Amino acid sequence: MSEKVKINESFEKLNELGKKLGKLGKNFQDVLEKEWILILAEQIKSLCKDLGIPIVSSVEELKSYPIVIFPSYHDHYDTEPQELKEILYHQILSSYDGKIKKTILGFEFYSDKSFEDLLNDPARNLHETTYLSGLKFKKIFLEFLKVFNEIQHKYSIDRFEIKVFGDTYAESVERQKAENMGDTEKVKEFDEKNYAKIVKSILDLLKTHEDYNLVFWTGMLHVIDLLTMLKEIIKSGNKEGINIDKIAVYLSPRDQSLSDYEQFKLKLLNCFISIMRK
Image (tube, rainbow, N blue to C red; front, side, top):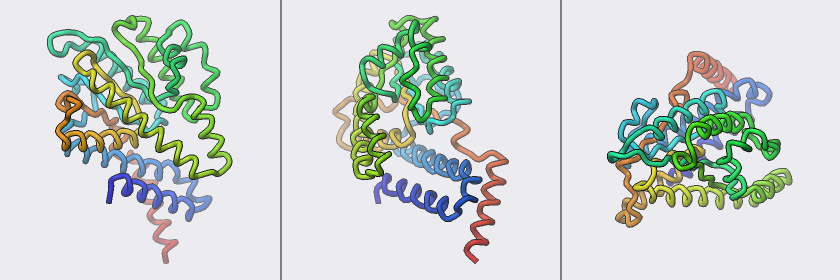
């Protein structure tokens, strides 16, 4: 059974559980989502172990890793922007191989060149934000814009640059239309193309590791796809010349364990499930 099939099955089980719980399930939505995050985090850890890629959870642990991959659930607007900011400053100021290199942030976003130019322009990126109105994770992107703007006022594009990857704005609109119409096949088709594009974009940037320090911020599922692809590349002799030894994966402590309150809610949820089964 492939890793993606296992993950999809886990998601379906959690989704089905939420439906069975009905209205009660809404009160436990945060715990169900956290369970999903923990499943993804464990899969990332497993793949990293196979590849010999270290998992780090603090900037201090980055040490000699000029390539950092930050898997995101896209919804932690209160913590992730600060974590990414610390990672970016660390990479910008760190000297690898005896010299300070330009840091490139590979960022999952609309992949239009116009949006990339906007994100890299500190005179515009905090003010021209109408395009975010329909974005699902608007809160976290607004916080990221503040981070980028702060860094860009300290360092020029010769030291820090953002490269975007993912769907174009038009493709994102078409996908949303398909989702609104309930066209699941069309949505699946859009997602598969987007997932493949994201992995290809990251791999292309990884090939430039000799010239730049690299940081990648993208979804946890995309990171799983990427790590799975890296395993295949290594098995095939790594003709692309990707230096796996230079990569670290940053997993937020928040994504690796349940808080006391979440543990309490999970126990309560399991009690309800036991009662329902009787």
